[in-house]
Length: 316
Image (tube, rainbow, N blue to C red; front, side, top):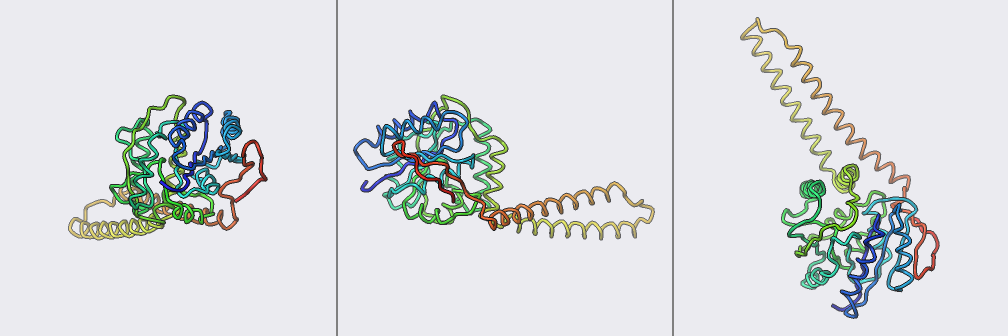
């Protein structure tokens, strides 16, 4: 490949694994291509920042970005991509589970004419909970973001420069990288790579973070939930009308049938729950609009580290 490759790695609780990931990247690329590595510390509570500073001191091709507080993986990816200058940007994890030594599989696939290439794992080593979350996320992106059914989405992917530049035009809070990719191009491919067992620590994705990610995905890039709520409301109204007609007919045929208090309460609870669900969904959209209007930052950078040189604060 001709040109430069930029690696972006969001870092959180990775003080024991990050150095090995960087060593593997450097060993893999060697003198074959020009490269740079952007490490984004997402306000990690351990010594991840200290490790990043050491790595930057040893290698001028490594850039460190330190967040003022925790903004999440997708904000870290956006911040890292804004620091890149490569013709191809490769995003991967900091825990060593994504094989950096197979990066040329993704790059070679890009050279076949694809705009974005995602790594696909033949045998995932994630926990059952994380795998379930991935399946739910895949189903959500298929139904709401028009993701091709056969396309596998992972955190390990390579994208061409024009795709990254288009993604970076999004400067609102609540970034969702998958949605930004899918609205930029559909010329996306998969390439199979190995997936390693986690050697240290555990996944940072809790149930709360996964739910937040899903909500962010469908509220930031799709209005289909609102349309589904409208369809659901119409269906419930039709069902209610049919039940009302059936009740009148049944009363005419059999006048001795007592009026049902339990069925009335059940219908009221169903309708009340549906109304509250729709109102909550509308409130979520309006709340995000309000936050965007108030120019809430996508992330806040405390410092940028280049060979121990601390640059000025930056806010976006």
